[in-house]
Image 1 (spheres, rainbow, N blue to C red):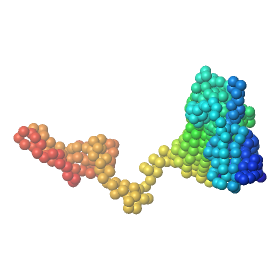
Image 2 (cartoon, rainbow, N blue to C red):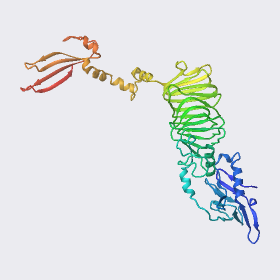
Image 3 (spheres, rainbow, N blue to C red):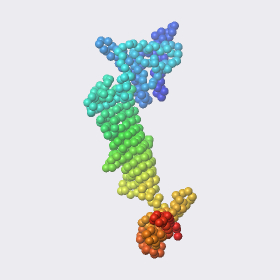
Amino acid sequence: MSITVDWPSLVINVPKADTTLVQALPTEIRKLDLNAFRLALKDLEDNEQGINWPITHRHNPPVLVGGVELARVVEIINGYTVTFEDGQYAVNLFGANSNVADRVNVNKVSVRSANSAGLVTSSAIEYGEYGGGVTIDTANMTGNAATGSLYPTGTLRRPCLVLADALVIANSRGFQRIYVIGNADFTAAHNVDGMIITGTSHVQNQLYLQDGADCENTVFRDLEIFGVLDGNNELNDCIVNSLTYFSGHIHHCGLKGTITLAGDEASVISDCKTIDPFSPPTIDMGGSGQDLAMPGYSGLLTIKNMNGLNMVGIGLLGGTVRLDSTVVLGVVQVAGVGSLEDMAGNAIETGTWNGGVSVINQTITEDSVVEKVWSIQGSLYPDAGTMGEALISSRDGILRTLGLLHENSYLDNTVYDENKNLLTARRRCFDSKANKDAATYGGSETTGLIATYTIEASYNDDGITLKDYQESLE
């Protein structure tokens, strides 16, 4: 039996057999070598299961200062606790200063710490200055970047000049975040699996991932990113510029270049948009690769290289999706405001396209909306409460309103008193200006005539209208 870690519960289990017997009677006392303890934990962190979880501890080796050796320090971090195999015995901790006694899950075992005083630094102050992660400036844009892994290197005031040093600091201090100043290249020598890589903005930071860089389960934020990924990644608020072997999620990003999918799980590219009309993005489906979901997309987009039973679903907020001739098998469903076309710009309708692609086209365009709203016959929708019924019932009133516009109405048969005040007249309303213009003064033309009104008015001795222009329908 040996030391184990229950990773989901973050509990480190220490069997009694991994401690050394110091005294059997009258009280059983055992001891635990903290250096051996932390080495066992490092081995567990490196195995297939442990590598996916945060590190268990932070280790500061002995330091020789002025001829005096300051003791080793082992600190349990990231929420891990320690459980000793239950029983009536005591365990003395030796070989390092530690916080193990403070992280013990209480049972019948008595755990005794033997920490000694020495040079004291404020780990809380140091931790706070890092801001939860290590800062890199590989181009030394700040002028303060430095090599090495000793504090304060890796903080914002003294960023790491070398990514490898930043990873050493992150590993030793339990950080999972790398802050990027300026541009950076990640090479095959770098392992950022499971880390969060954060830039200042996608305008200020370009990140190039060379083929071979370990970046599985890695999150990228506020960067312009291009290169080769390992898979199961998440990209937020980035410019995505020609990525190879992408799987995972892309949120709120601008796309350009070619994004090549890979993996067995569906890729999600949500609320993204075209940012360069001269280089609209292309999604390479990777042959018979994975499914693709793109809700809330805006702009131009091309889908190519799909020859398996894959599903592509795209929700357009406004834009055009084009299918390349290399899309020969699978299902493509596009809905929203925009259009679905082939590479020649011809509309692709619902049905079977290019031999074996099942297409569901649910897009609408501005012209189609206008057509459906204004050209549909109201008689097709006469039911009570519908727009068709409302239009039908208000037709006459609408026509009268149109006719009363000045350009469509004609005033004639006018009679005035000696003071040139209008006494009576006739107003006729037509359905168009052309029909109004064809009418003659005092005539009886009825082409396009909507309604005829008579007007009467009277005045007092001062010429003030007593009866306004009162119109009555003849």
